[in-house]
Image 1 (cartoon, protein in one colour):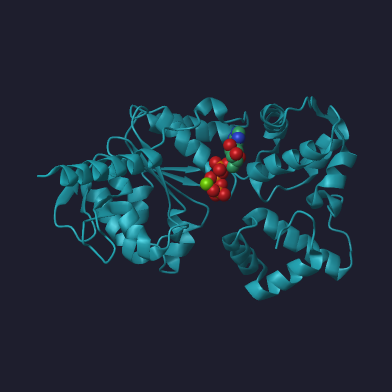
Image 2 (cartoon, rainbow, N blue to C red; image 1 turned 90 degrees about the vertical axis):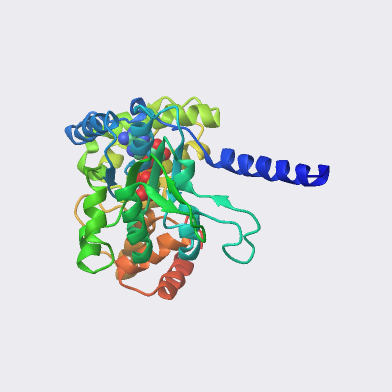
Length: 345
Ligand SMILES: Nc1ncnc2c1ncn2[C@@H]1O[C@H](COP(=O)(O)OP(=O)(O)OP(=O)(O)O)[C@@H](O)[C@H]1O
Ligand SMILES: [Mg+2]
């Protein structure tokens, strides 16, 4: 082999390794980062800690923003595999056509453009954990392939003929109702039973509001560090306002709300007025009961609620439109009319 060829070969090896390195992470959070003293959260932590000691597949269920990713990291971080890779795959973010090669890699020449082979996430996760996020959004064909991997722990790269064996611990998560998807024929029942060996359902924030003060404190501490502020806490009336709200976007929404206020206010104690001034969610929050109000105001309230719950992404808007039973185009039109400062269109 001449020098140029040798150099080319080494460069390919280096490129592959760099690519691999860029994707491998160790877990970012541990159980100590999970705040909550309510029985609901303690039950989840307890089950998650037990599952960390085993190799069992874990299925994390819960609404958006409830902490599924936090739990997935913590389980890996407390397991025997903690020194090994933690690989996250967002099954909803990768186009369906690419998902298979993302999972299993591809062999050189598998398709036009495949000038060299590529290692997939399952191989990267070997001896560690793979976190399959948004598993409810995966297409049926791939669900079948995943099922085989879970059963046999072996697969072939796309376009390859060599069987690759791996040792991977699987944690899956979704905010969708899998039973409903199974009923509609959109999710394989056999895959569901493979995944839910240990099933942990993280409750929405509105069902464990007693954890609000601790969560708020924890968020303020984190944000003080991030924003260089010296906020000490909330006034009684501000805290009451937080309790009167249902938090459709759960802990993530709570963190966003506090950040929005902390960025804009320079006081040490945040009061109710600050929250109402800077957070759209609270401007039209009905006092306890929903009172009679103009229909367009009611519509605006529901749209804000849906946006807060599903998030301001294209996918979030699609889900919000679905939940509101209007078309995506109608939702865009209505958002344009509302044009609040913090709902970008
Ligand atoms: N119990 C908790 N204690 C402390 N922080 C929490 C808790 N639950 C959630 N968080 C924080 O809330 C944010 C959202 O959590 P996470 O990303 O884990 O939610 P998720 O369930 O994966 O949401 P999605 O379904 O939208 O992906 C993160 O910043 C996370 O650290
Ligand atoms: Mg998540």
